[in-house]
Image (tube, rainbow, N blue to C red; front, top):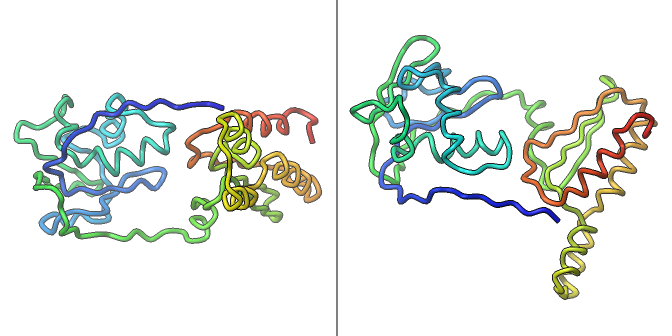
Length: 238
């Protein structure tokens, strides 16, 4: 099985910028802030301290370890963007340590750090395409499938590179003896090779032309499962 190593800087957070953002896949918006800045809620962010928001977000890539771009975005927006400590090495840090946020409508807010933890949030709840969100939202299983025959699309959400077979093999290799209760729980975890067999058989029966494999939520695991998936994607493999 594969292993992952992460190295992150630990820091005692004593202050934060009351600034919470969300990314809709294209742009960044102000989702939460303190009351003095609430006029910016829901607005699209253009720059911070005069630098384009995407460049600001990308500037944290050397500050911590991450599995993939989705994990990186989540970490930056949730943990790093709002912590003054992580701005210390940025060339666009302002002398007064504030964040000058400029929105797409040219309005601005100048955000000062406040003592942590901060509780008095003003929050904006964005309107979302519920049908799209239901399809793309993370399912609480290692892998799942959806078919959209009217569009000839098969959607495979691949959330984790692990299944019952690889888990049992890992426990066996490590000499771990499972209790009856643990073994029963493990029996409920599906096997990826069986899932793929049924998935591609159904896709063939439905004459599906387009396959979407969603790995945005996948932190990794055993690469053997990836090889199983790739074996079905070779020419004439179906």
